[in-house]
Every structure is written in structure tokens, then in C-alpha cells.
Image: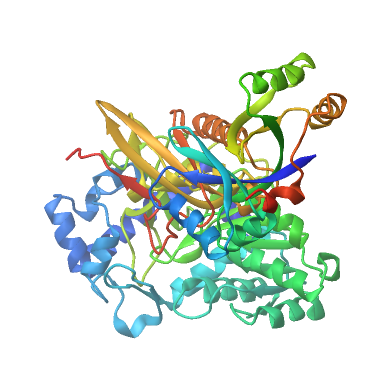
Length: 436
Length: 142
């Protein structure tokens, strides 16, 4: 089912015309209302009148997370204070948090886009939908909540925590749809098992998952353990929140609500735009946002865009799975390597624990990548006595990683509990090359 | 006919072996024989000790990657050539030896080894009336 056929299935030309008109308008809007953008545009020698179509977007400067931090809290807000009706904040692990203000129209666009996502997941006004994203400063909870209300389904604002109570409500209310992080979905499944509640006791059939990277293996695990179909939901608070893109039944990438969020893929090194089908960093320009519009915001998320037709009938461009982050991307022997690619291989091996360390080094003129991975304690249980199982595991892992990365790696098996646990970002990589 | 050997996976970094030996010391477990096989990155330490089950439980409790496994221990007269004679009996039946080590105890030679076919190896021992060390004798060996 499709929520807004007019917009989701509009002809590519008509959408382009709409995007061009909106792009011109948003550039004009920030030029007159955000001193930061006015000076950036002036530096680039660009006036709003230079932006006549989406092809002109390349003339615009990029916006980064650092710009948001530097202009904390309201420096990038374009709407007058009296028009802002909600403020969200993302946790700032490094520096200032990111503050995003929304006008009444922003909330309405968000709810519209979110309703498109939910409809695509098969949710209708007859459903009971539980939102188990955190409510509060995080955009996940309230963002999905307003979408469910807009759609007309009954929303259960479960939030996170009190998982046992939540499981009970899922069962007693006959909840049919759910939104949460993929890891919380697995936590729910574990809690159900502990409580002796089988998936057959629930009426859940559809779930929207996002806000953290997840693999196909996790998707299958969630689907099997909860007895539902699991869909991807992508978004980021700087752009709006959850609702930026969503999977359809084809699950062949996530459709971007590109009449509101204009996507580009760029090479994170050279910053030049890349065509559809090539992977690079995802960049969004908000086309209709009033509170805090952003021009060419660099998400740091790496993925590929697809403009090939989708069997669901939607004509919007699709984004593939997030391959990693441009800020932790490694270039090894000229090949882009994202730690998440290695991670997904490790997660697919039952012998391995999800703890690993990538060590990049340079031997002579050749980059080397060593993957240290912990095995599960069962690996050394009764009967382990020779190197053979270790060597077999190393061979299997390095062959699989090589087929994903296209470069050879050295795998080192580590004992359970010996690798440092990550406490933040980028703790899984040590780059010993002294290249700069 | 077999005895329990402790096999421990050891990464090649200092301190790992000490930890294992200290744990055994604290439990009053005595080593009868030990050997380390190694590659560039890893080692496997194999230990015959007075109380294998207790040693295994202690090591696992402390997170050591240990396992218990069955190996043969033959007692041989301390005379040149006895090991060759014994191993030849197994080889002639097509039994492969995965690893082997030996030590002298109370004037007797002791040959510890793992085979790829334990049931056939048992047969060879029986047919040739080879003298093997049973598990219950381990604590008496010392």
C-alpha cells in the first residue's frame, strides 16, 4: 500500500521540477535568514538566483556536523523563535550536542513522511502500533509517534525500558506493529523467551527498525524470533528524524522521501558528486524545512543510491544499506574498507564472538590488515587439542573477508574475553601507518 | 586405556603460561609432564597432571581456554629402541600419530600420544599386551 501516490509515484520529471523549485526557495530562505549560510554563499560567490534547478546544487557549499556544533545552539535556525514549536537534541559524545528546532509545518511534513513509511510496512488505521524508541530529546520516539497518529493507527508510546511490561502489553493489546532499534528488538525476543511467551502468542506482524546499523543476519534473527517482517527505517535528526527513507515490500533499498530530502552521493575524499550505483558519502539537502534547513549536509553515512525502477510502483530514488561511516573509512592498498564490512562477516560465523580489532600497518610499501577476532568460549570446550580447528577458522574467515573487501587479510584468533570492549566510536581500529 | 590430558590454547604473549601454572600451583596440582607446541601466533600447552578433572575445572573457572582430551600413555622399559618398536605396531595398522612426547619416570619410559583412530589403537594395545598407564594411576605416578 502507498500513502501518498501523488508524491511517492510522481513522474521523475515532475519530481525534478518540484525539487528544483523547492531548492531555489530554500537557498533564498537561508540566504536571508541564516547569517552562517549567507556568508558561506557569499564566499562561494553564489546568490539564490544562481540556483535554478537541482543540477545547480553542486554550486552550494557543504554543511558538516562541526558547523552545527560551532553554531550551537540556534545559529543555524532560520525560523523566528516564535515559530519553533519543538526542539530535539542529539547526545554530543564529542563537543556540543546537536540542536534541531522544528516549526509546526516541519512537524507536519515529518508526520506525512513517517506515514508514508508506515504504510509501506503494511500498517493501516486498523493497527495497534507500539513505539519502543526512546521518547525524549531523541527524535526516534516522538517522530514515529506523530506518524502513527497521522496515519490513524493506535499508538502505544511504550518507549524503552520496562521491557517485561512492554511484552505483556504487546500480548494483551494484540499489538500488530512495532518500531525500535534492531538490538532492542532482540532484547524483546529474549525477554519474551524468559517470560515463557512464544511469538505465536503475539499478533505482531510488522516492524520498523533503524537508528543503528544492522545486518541481514540480524534481520533474519528478528524476523524468526518475533515472527514478523522486519523493515528498515532510516533517518537522522539533523535532517528530520526517522522518516527520511523506508523499505517497501521489495526490500531492495530504502525509498527516500526525496520531495523533501534531496539526496546526493559524493566521494568523501574529493567531495565530487558520484552517479547512482556508485558508493560514497550520503549528502542531504532539506527542501521544505523551515526550522533548521540544511544545505548539502554531509551525513558521513556511506551507501549507494539506485534510480532503477522498483516493483512497488514508487518512483523515488532508493538508498542501499549503510556500508559504514566515512569518518572511519580506511583506505588499504587503495581500496575503501569499512569496519562494518568485516563486522558483518564476523557476525555470520557462529564460532566468533562479536568482538574484534582491525589493525592496519604498512610493511615496506604494502598496507596490511590484520583482523583479530575473539572466539566464543565453546570453541575451546571438550576436545580442543590441535591447531587444526583454529587454522580452519582462520582460513574460512580470511576467505570470506577477502571476498567482501577484495583484499587479503591476516586473521588472528583470540581467546574469549581478551580484546578490549568498545567504549565509543572507532575503538575497533588501530591504524599504525604513519602516512601524514 | 586412555588418560586425560589438559590442552590449553595460548596466545604468544608473555604472562599467559605463568597464569596457567600459578592456577595449578594454588590448587596443589602437580605436573607430571608438559609440552608446548607452537606456531608463530599461538601455542598449545599439553599437560599431564595428578588431577586432570580438577585442573580442567579450575582453569575453565578462571577463563582459561582449556579442554580435556583423551591420549594414550604407554609405559616402556628404559631400553633403546622400545619407542620405535611400539610406534611401529601402530604404523603397521595405518594409525597416524597426531603428536607424541615422552618422559622418564621412576626408571620407566612413558610415551604420550594422540592418534587419529582411538578404537583401532586400543585394539593394537590389547593384542600386543602393551603396558598402558590408566587414569587412576596418574596421582600415584609421583
